[in-house]
Image (cartoon, rainbow over all chains, first blue to last red; front, top):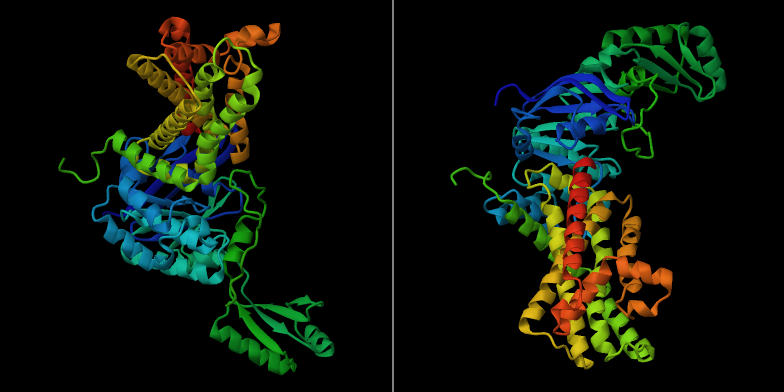
Length: 324
Length: 256
């Protein structure tokens, strides 16, 4: 397959006169992970809905898996798999029956083998014959994704696939995504966990106010914003005051007894900094190096944004910081 | 037939969906209670408790059975509305919509299972009626007419209910939306003749859709097919089917 699995240009969508997407465009290379970030209400779910044929764009062209969305809707549907924000599993059917339903609808040959394989891979074999209503949240998400994988779609859309999952289940999901990419599948991922985008994505686009505020690899994006610093923490207030007085060009936090010194985190700069601290007689109890993470990028790029209200609110805005 | 996974007919997609709906019905005792047992409970209440006090000019079981058939159809609708809405709100319908699956197959599945449940409920009603001394004068052809009209009504009410279920915001409100359809048989000539009612109520009863349907069934079961206004009965059913179908398909396309 040539270059791009998803090609979007000039995409616009308004709901009731309110512009949600104001001409966005991006390209997703086949076999890569593309992550769309943005605050709640930025239009992430609207974008996913359009790309997966659920909603029609007002303007713009979209090609998915080599087919035009408008003229080749059926071909697009046959090539994609979608896992939404909420596990769309049939509660009254067992896990196995849910997978069987997908296999039947997709006319998958040797469905039994495919189903058994997916149940094993997602560690659902033991509960395969229990109704999905009895599954835990993590198991439902896994079943949901397993259902999406029936028929091996070439392009998979994951809309906040790990929201509400515990850390272990989240890591299991990440492993599954990595394995899919290794097999050549293209993944379009929206997430509110920046750590997730950092872990998985080859390219990241930040959606803000209906436009793409920035796009690039996670490392490229991190270089866009300042925020690298060395943090010194003191336990003795006297030592803290002495250090704060001796060092210029620092941000002091009197409550936490910490000092932040701008730094790019390179060995050369750290060395210079340590020499400087020794010379000034500063003895910190803890020294940590903080490189800019996607949190910094996200906050810098989406700062002045009021939610426009088309993403489903998830009830929390929590972002996990990436401690490095 | 050489290409893989492209030749598909709506019928087979609908059959796959229907199999899913059948499993739902069998596994959900509430559905079975609502659509099959509850009409029989109402039947026993009317025939054994209240019916003795009604003067209808014939054995009460003979008078009331046609109305009970219509009631059996309408009682199954609440679970259909709830099931359709649950598919909508849990994202199951969106899951089908992003697949290369014939549009509407999931809705057809719901309508067909509704009709099947109605048939089972009506067969149960007729069975219990016979056990209580029901003595119809219907010929085999008349019985066929009864079956046809019950099925027509079931499909009409089924499409209307599917539309209600799709349009409702929550499962609870979907169940509520079907209540008027469940209540209508009580405001008809199902249990007592219209001419025994007060003026305002009587006019409503005479012109509401279930009355001509019940009277047509009554005529057929009595072996007198001309006893009811069959044309009006069929027209109401066809009208409901068209309105329900168009509304359901439009809502299905719109809601994502």
